[in-house]
Length: 221
Image: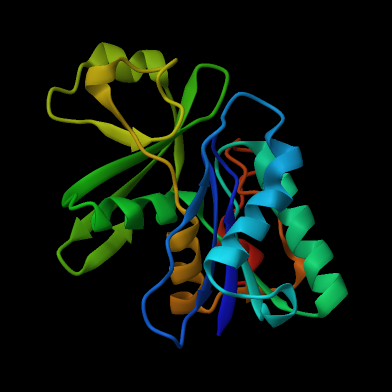
């Protein structure tokens, strides 16, 4: 299967084009400029990923995207790209949790044990999910929850470091490890889980109690 994956939920965005039947996955292409105006560069990022993966636009069979949590605007841009692509070429789409993708990235980097994955939820809050990471991969996960960043800092968990993007304004360096979800993990999870959905049903993973949705909810499970 020829998959194009995009992950736009954080300040360091990425894309990856992968033929899952051809062996190893190509290198993820990152947008290194986090200054501003990133939305206008999303399509250029996609083109760079296609070129790196040796894939033409018309060859793409599935588009996988990160649904957040994270940047609402970034996720909306990814959804717009996916819906437009699907309308034009009739391809399948898959929405993937950016938190789960980041947990998979952490596993690939050698992280093991109970791991906290966090995103800036605005309003001085963190969106945190806990994942069990073993030698064989990412296992059981807890539901994403909102917690006060100030409360987390005041608790001073000596042996707990949250992994996630764009957390420096909420947490001191000793309590977080900067990490951004990759398009590679988005692609791998989409193929592994087969979480295809109708383009019209793609929605960001909300993190407020009155609007929270999981990927499973979107798939009708």
